[in-house]
Image: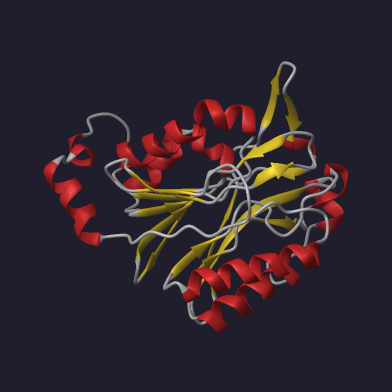
Length: 264
């Protein structure tokens, strides 16, 4: 997707894509980071809403209607803590086929960077950092959640693997300059070193923060093979069949997770 500042138009586009994915047989569908609204950064606290608000209700009803597990990209979640000081969380939410909120994860690592002449972003101006990793059991496997810039922090993914994650879903709005350099390499690395599937839906096209998003939504298997790549642009759906047998074989034949000598 390439979301803009018209929330209802974004939700309509998301519903069409998710419905298409479900029609193709998908049991788990994931949307990109901030799929429902991207606009001027200073408006984010104003736009933010509870997980039970318009966007969460939309995702819940869509999951229930289609009978799928749905990762609702990420939602700008309002914070009622006085310490929030006009900021909000960037939160991904997993909805079950009965429409229940099964898990939520607040992005831990905020994208505060200045790549000279190309990117200058300060997410911490309007967003709060989460502090709790998230893994949840489903009939499709144990799912871990992460968001975009989290990709650069392998300790988070290793913690998810240690908690039993077999699938990690990474909604993203990765920048084009850093995406060209690192996106495929890092997504594949996180899959290889943690011997898990990584599903990484990504925004494409112009962003409200003054840079292009990279696109190339990916599905990568536990051996690091790219099973699906959406390419650089155009709204679309990519699908792949995840195999519990392949995951078990990779972990059995190359039991690196069990060979760890350092860390928790």
